[in-house]
Amino acid sequence: MYNKVVMDHFRNPRNVGVIENADGVGEVGNPLCGDMMTIYLKIDDDRIADIKFQTFGCGSAIAVSSMLTEIAQGRTLAEAKKITNKDVAKALEGLPKNKLHCSNLGADALQMAIKDYEDRLAGIERPEAVREEPHEHSHGEKCYCPYCDIELDEGVSFCDACQSSLEEEH
Amino acid sequence: MDVVNLDQISFKPLLAEVKAAMINAINQDYFNPSSQHKRGEQAAEVLDAARRSVAGLINAAAAKEVVFTSGGTESVNHAIKGVAMANAEKGKHIVISNIEHNAVIRSVRRLKSMGFRVTSVSVDDKGRVNPRDIAEAITDETILVSIMHSNNETGTIQPIEEIGKITREKKIIFHTDAADSVGVVPIDVQKLGVDLLSFAANTFYGPPGVGGLYIRRGTRIYPLLDGGVQEHNKRAGTENLIGIIGMGAAAQVASARLDQWVAHCQGLKDKLLAELPDAIDEYIINTHPVHSLPNMVSISVQYIEGESVMLMLDDDDIAVSTRSACATGSLRASHVLISIGLSHADAQGTLVVSFGKDTTEDDITKFLTSLKEVVTTLRNISPLYNKVSNSTA
Image (cartoon, rainbow over all chains, first blue to last red; front, side, top):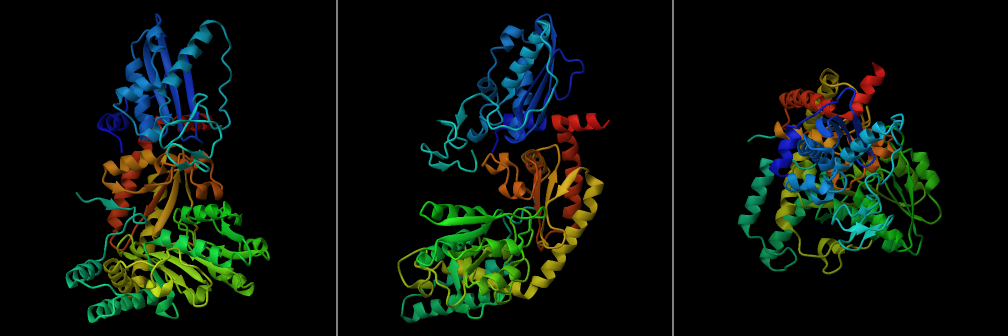
């Protein structure tokens, strides 16, 4: 199901854990989707001095988090801001199609953690960490067919491209 | 490499007797059972013998009441769509439960698009249908009630006999999907009071891709496949004779050894449930404590996700199944687990551990040892576990 790189990062995840008094924290996903990720950053001189993650999710979600931390470690904030979910998937040498949009959230969590850091610097109060109620599309506004990966309109119950019924699944 | 197969609801190894019967069948070069020459008649006799063995396993009044199919899915499709088509003039209402297999759910969904109405009754938090709810759901328009005998995700057994009394009294056709029950627990179609019963050969160590549909004599139903007059006009197409012979051999062995298999599996299930608290904490058992199959247990391990657990156990050469959304490809938590009241997060951490006649106590011990380690590893990664342990600290 998963390639060797993904399996390696899943079985031996890098940078697992929590940074106490982190400079920035980013959290994405919800249990309804199946995956949740939290990224912790320690920033030193506009550079990611330390990065750690915690993930609730499938094999690819854990591998994505691990790979993301490896890519981001040591980068300047300007460089880190350019990291996308696609970059992570590419570094993992590919993910199964139906996992691309549900578990490939690492870069989103990183970007939220960087924003959290910048907000704190700017003196914007960090809102109390309250878990949001489950909702369908926490990862970007677009919606994709889980089977063939094509972009879909919100709320459709059938994918015309691959003839999959999405009534229950979507 | 020996893998500990604790995913026997997905696949059971073929019995030695089944392999021998199928290899012999191949070597016999049987003709087409529909042919009227000597070699055809010889094949027809073998087919009949298999049908009698299978009919015996479910205590059908006549062997003719068993139709061979390509498996549980075809049987279910045949039962539901066949009854709907044959009885549409009487009414267009069907009653099912919320926890049926997708073969049932998607069959009735297809019928809905053709003008049928469907009532799906809910289950209690232990996953059981209340027969009174079925009685209340039935209307003058109802032509079919379809309730599964046991659930494929939890192993919980439904009160089929009680529902059968209701449907008989109201003269409504009653189908039960017994794909996970026949050959695992004793099944007597006459005692259950069902008109139709779907089952599959691999459930009792027969070949995958072969199954049966019990059709009580006099039940109004159309074939799913139209064509020739095979299977007493109920299922057209040249018979899968080698597969059917395998199913017949499996049924014969199952009839003889079922009590022994039940006792063996029940012992393993009791051991698993007794020793699980020593291995892990914070889990939910989704299997009914009394009314359930002896050969499986559904466990929701909290704060972690099932596919990760399954993959890590696989590394230790232990095969289990998971009902997490991620692993099923549906990207949605199982409708069965949500129906019995699990939260999405808990449903995500669900493992189905299923065993069979060759499973040993040592296999269960290996599983528990490995599970303990895997759960610790994954909880250390999980932000949910972190939050809960912080808040309780």
